[in-house]
Length: 263
Ligand SMILES: [Zn+2]
Image (cartoon, rainbow, N blue to C red):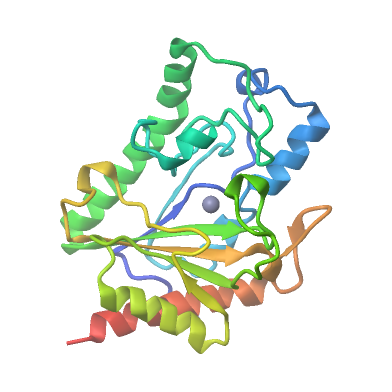
């Protein structure tokens, strides 16, 4: 049977799978080419575009075109609102995953230039996609699509001895109905995966104009353990990639269906 794909009221948000670093941004980094390659290998949610859009159906896809080392579109624009900013990892990172210096100090104009070129346009695309879906379908589900390393990186400040789950579901108190959250956890657990909720990563992103204002915009984050679908050194898709991609779609699709069918 051919998979029907996601319904048209789903937006797949893919913020972290690009490895692109434009030349003018490269010159801000304090890393050698080898060090930068290692940092990109560690921090990128490799191939999450392919992983989550294998059965895209009628969903809208919004993907960040540059590496999170250029700007991290998943962070709040304002460092005062962004909890990771105090670790040097707000929208514009100043440190590496090892908490070593990543960038030279930027002038306010340089910082604003990066935000204008890469951050705000991405959020405008996300805002437009969600607005269009809500206008046409009366609701929208943003699935925030990520992966995470099998072993915690130093910046996470977590115990590396703790075994990580296969799947982490992230939710938001306002935008993730309890039934939807449960449906996602149950669907992935039902396939035999070890699932955790809001751990090691928490939350789910929606456009800022809707944040904690518009209940028609729902959100859930799906984070996949990279050990499930990736070979390292060199980074490449593992032999399980297609199977895992299909299972992610089937679980998410099943979760959406069972949420919609609840009275
Ligand atoms: Zn990510």
